[in-house]
Image (cartoon, rainbow, N blue to C red; front, side):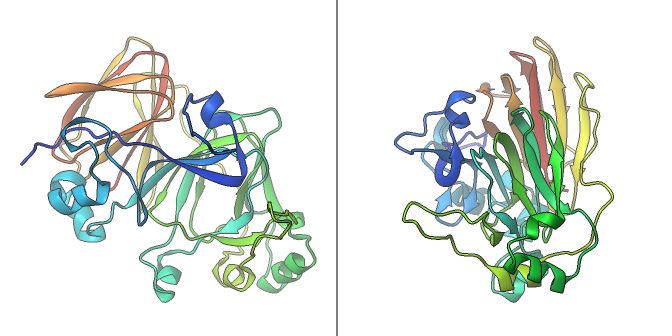
Length: 329
């Protein structure tokens, strides 16, 4: 049997009605004949959109097939026990030219009620923000289900949405059931549970290419939404700390840390205490990942999957680089 090594994957490009061109212009990725690329999936175990390995002996193999074959050696024994043969996280870049729909995702409990495997908790790291770029997360005050329903049908839901001005490096944790949307010029890295279930609450009265309104999911949304108001929706972290690992987001579904590495610096990592895979995603600059057996270059807008059986690696900054490090505890 072939030996596991850090895996890279072919990106999956998705056309979206609200998509932009930053995947090509800023990340230098060729999304082919698509008019606009709204999403670039870097690592996916979603059925029908399974990531394909692009490097080494497993080139051409599907991610979930490798999970089935290597089980805990790839993802960790605890992770395999919890999630089985489906890779549990979806890593993507989202690039909106116009507003995404105002939307919400179910949590695990609701997902299982309707026959889905799991819900969708996620986080956003802002890779690039145009001047005055905004996003929506949560409500700007306490609301009730009846009030929200009335505002949706009156097309006034925006009155109770919490808008946030954003800049590069901002982080927002979006637990399942929280209303949210991304605005124009706000390109984010998204780390989420493996799920593609989205309920549209409101779509800005937008028409598609056929002159039709896109489907809304109002009953599902009203059942799913968390109507509570939070004092703050931002995730604070030590974004200026150099050459170290900084805790960013920790939840039941993933832990994500931030690594701000100066050009020419090397950071040694020992993952022997983890019972999990590790994903390293470049959200700025390039780095090399050295391991016993070789090395791989990771460019901005790319990620690499370190199997559970690989404990010690070195991360070397080819540029000043910013890295998201993600695993499951």
